[in-house]
Every structure is written in C-alpha cells, then in structure tokens.
Amino acid sequence: MNHFDQGIDCYQRKDFLNADFHFKKALVEKGLQAETLDYLARCRSMLGDSRGALELFDQTLTIKPTWERPYEGKARLLANREEYEEAEALARRALMLNAESAESWAILAYVCERTLRLKEAKSCYLRALELDPTLEEAHIHLAVVYYEMREPYSKCLEQLDRALALNPDSTDALFNKGLIYKDLRRYGASKKAFEKLLAIDPQDREANLELAELYKRDRQYGKAEQCLSRARERKVYDGRDGS
Image (spheres, rainbow, N blue to C red):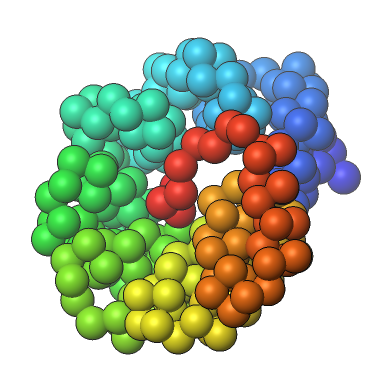
C-alpha cells in the first residue's frame, strides 16, 4: 500500500496524525497533487493547525480552482472560527461548482444555523441529507434546528436516533437526546442517555452536571456528588451544538 492509500486508511479511521504523516510522504513521492493537498489540509484542520490548513486549501485551489472540495474544507474551517460571511461565500461557491454536494449544503446549513436563519438552515440540512443520509452531524444539527424552531419533539428525536444509528457513540446526539427527554419529563430516559454518554466520556462536564441534577431528583445523592466532582475537574468546555 502506497503512502496516499495509507493516508486514506488512517483518515477514515480518524487517525489524523498518522494520516498527516502519510499524506506528506505522498507529496514527496508524487509531487503537488490537489487531492493529497486537500486531505492534508483537512488533517491539519482536525489537528488544530488552522493556519496551516488554510495555506494548504489555498494551494489546492491554485492547482484546481474548479473543484468544490477545497472550498468546502476552507468554508468549514472558517465557520468553526465564526467567520461566517466568508464561510458562506465559499460554501455557495462550492455549490455553484457542484450543486449535488451534500457537504456543501451541510456547511451552508451550519452557517445559517449559527447566524439564526433557522428556516434556511432547516432547508439546507434537509437537502444535504437527501443527497447523503449518512451525514451524522447534519442529523444532529437538524434536530437542534427543529428544537429551536419549536417543532415537535418527535422530529428532534427521530434525527438524533438516525445519528445514533450511524454512530452509537455520538456524545452530541446522546447529550441532546438527554435534554429533550428532560424537557418531556421522561426523567428515566433522560438519565439513561446521559449515563450512556458518560460511559463513553466520563469527564464530559455538561453531561455530569445534567446527570447530577437527575440523580438529586431521585435522591441518589452519592451518585450526584460523583458527577459534580467530575464536573469540577473538567474546567474547560467549548460548547455543545453537534459541531
């Protein structure tokens, strides 16, 4: 297996550090190729090197300016940095190049969601999922949009269940499911969702706080204190919206 194929294998397993290594080796072997640069940029983005990722996306666009993928990758990175205006322009550019790109629709939907254009976000997420029903994050975000639009809880839960069918260990889907069951006063189901999440990530601060509240409601004070203790240990939290 050559370095590019090894990079793809690592990338699909979300082993971005080793994928980065193999894609760099592939560039040495085969020279600057757009697909390799794009994957390397995505690895850098996942590894937190946003500056390096942006430079690599720009290199890719220089080589292949009519390919939608580098526009998508750059748009997602900028959206995560809350640079929504430029992210939206890039996502729309990607859709001009390929109107059937589920990823482009999902990125545009995310920008609309974060800028509170919920009806447009809903429409874009539905289009993305029509094109590719396996987009786990799109299902989660569509559930959040339904929730914010005060649509029936059943529609939110349906999308979260679809996300969990794709990835049973999705902590974002489990967290949002726990919140919805709590709103419905289905406290047992809510507790079960948070317990499953914490079995995957015991240090999740927000889930520990939610579960502590449920344990206190059931007078399980010892378990509640354990959750609170874990929550105090986890001081940094970067939000919960499925992004």
